[in-house]
Image (cartoon, rainbow, N blue to C red; front, top):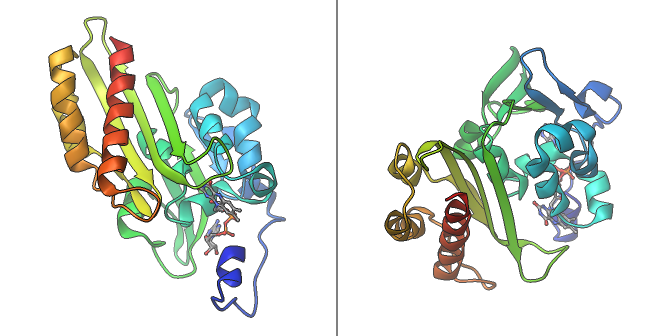
Length: 245
Ligand SMILES: Cc1cc2nc3c(=O)[nH]c(=O)nc-3n(C[C@H](O)[C@H](O)[C@H](O)COP(=O)(O)OP(=O)(O)OC[C@H]3O[C@@H](n4cnc5c(N)ncnc54)[C@H](O)[C@@H]3O)c2cc1C
């Protein structure tokens, strides 16, 4: 909102701070062992919290790639999601996260993918209260953000993956997501279907790379072309899958 104001976009005449609602800013393990993260939890807490470090370190890693320490101390995980192109979204999609919203009729829950498709809250004025990550996170998780320098930089490409593989290198379950720049992050559902139940072999991987390039509908801008973004996304995801072999 601060950036929008600096660009001359009208700032609302009144803002209501939710900062003192402590339940909206805590992280806990629920009775079904999921991880509940209050939407107002700041990104620095996501990066350093002991429960995240123990049960879902990849999310802490992703939070640590967002902006700078000063922004992470103020910016929240919920704000990053509602920003629409936040770098935390791909890994939350890969982890199959759910959102809880405080709506006029009560709490509504939905998969994060539902919000990402719609690009808006379920109703006007709805407040995002929680981000829920199913746990235990049994599979292997991967997150990588590519920027034009190491830190404090908008993403050119962000990729994330969750994969469970059996002893014979057969994929039991996989979720892949890509984003970056102005692109709304997306799951690669067709590629996931192509890989599920398959044995990972070198020949299979080269076919997968071209399918990822095709399905990841990343567009280009002044910083990077669409083709560059899609190629990087495909290379990163395939390289990670190859490391499972
Ligand atoms: C210098 C700078 C660098 C940045 N770098 C990055 C980066 O590298 N990667 C990245 O992903 N982002 C980046 N950002 C964007 C942004 O600051 C972060 O994504 C941050 O997480 C946003 O959180 P916030 O709490 O400040 O959200 P806000 O900007 O306050 O909120 C965003 C929108 O969501 C709404 N909103 C927020 N919380 C809720 C809620 N709980 N319920 C309903 N609506 C809500 C707000 O009203 C607003 O419309 C950067 C921002 C700055 C200023």
